[in-house]
Length: 84
Image 1 (tube, rainbow, N blue to C red):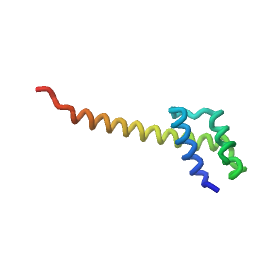
Image 2: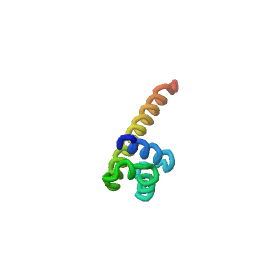
Image 3: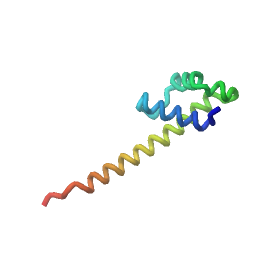
């Protein structure tokens, strides 16, 4: 049996790959919850609470990606030679 946190990470990663969006779709997460065994492994887990956990993970991943992109842009800008 997987840890709940593993299911959350798995859902967040899969959703970003499929949707490319940090705003979680309710139908998608309900399907994931049922089809990937979360409901079987954690029968007392509330779908809404799981949705919130995955949405939080998506927000964190999105913020990290934004910061990484910003760092890459800064690095690229600093390497461009200045005109004389």
